[in-house]
Image (cartoon, rainbow over all chains, first blue to last red; front, side, top):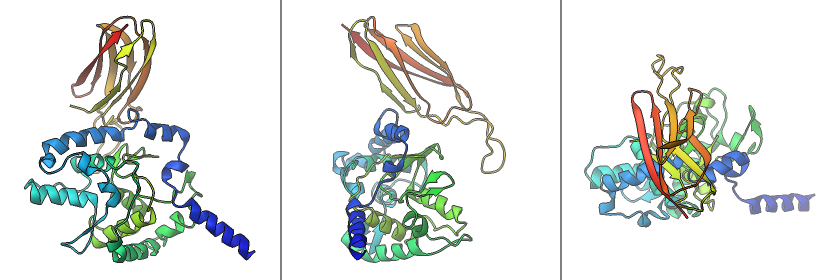
Amino acid sequence: MRRRVAALALLLMAAGPRSGFETMTPELQAIQRDDVANPGMLSVAEGEGLFAREGCTQCHTPASMQGVAARYPAFDERRGGPIDLAGRIAECREQRAGRPPLPRDTRPLLALEAFVAHQSRGLPITPDPRLADARAEGERQFRLRRGQLNLSCAQCHDDHAGGKLAGATIPEGHPNGYPLYRLEWQSLGSLQRRLRGCFTGVRAELLAPGSVEALALEAYLFGRAAGLPIETPAVRP
Amino acid sequence: MAQVLLRVPSLARRGEVIEIRTLIQHPMETGFRPGADGTVQPRDIIRRFTCLYDNRPVFEAALHPAVAANPYLTFTIRADQSGVLAFTWEGDNGFRQTETRAITVT
């Protein structure tokens, strides 16, 4: 019995994290694979234009952005904690390029983020070891029961991943395709927006965008998905 | 200008059936949905798509409020001469966009 449990545990470990891509219907997978059918590519194209127009090209090139998204959230020396890609782009634009701030979840910031993250498509997520503290706090957030339904992230996305919630398959909840095009949204959206969707679902108080808790949760999610390839812009139901 | 993604072969053999794929950025607001303030948002959709092959219509589509955002249209045409393919999307609020692609037929 013990040997069988050990074998099962080994099998599960070998399987590693599974991207939400694998549990989608073949039709949706085909949309994501095809760069003309994938509506997220419209935002990538928009972001490519912004990257040049917003002055990003004065310091960076699209080629130098390769692999960047696979390292985020990154360790920010100044804060001594994690910073996510959207936060970094907004900060860089405001402080170095001296332009007016771009709020989170606005179309231009999402487009820029999609373009930058798209340069890392296919590269494995490699979490920063310096973020161990943030990831520990993030794991606490992940396992914290919250909201009127008193559910934690782990209860669905660890314990019941692959099961059904009202007809939809529960994914493992990996952040490797963001910003992604969600059919339900009919638009491109950020990981933070997706988290807000789950939090609202369990009727919990939302984490403030860019707050310490939100960034810690994000850092944990990326640590949990280590090794999965970046899929930006992914398509999800 | 809305972002457009097009896949049109630039080379084709005479008589070959070629596949054309188009994707355009558009909210396709149905005119039935309430906004955040509870009032119904006015309709804003693409009504018509046409493809002209050397000014000769080869494909047309009428779009309706049930079509999802960022309409994706794919169709096939027979390549019979070198020329220009012009794609036009027309819709509410004076929306009109045209993209052209040249095709060489050998």
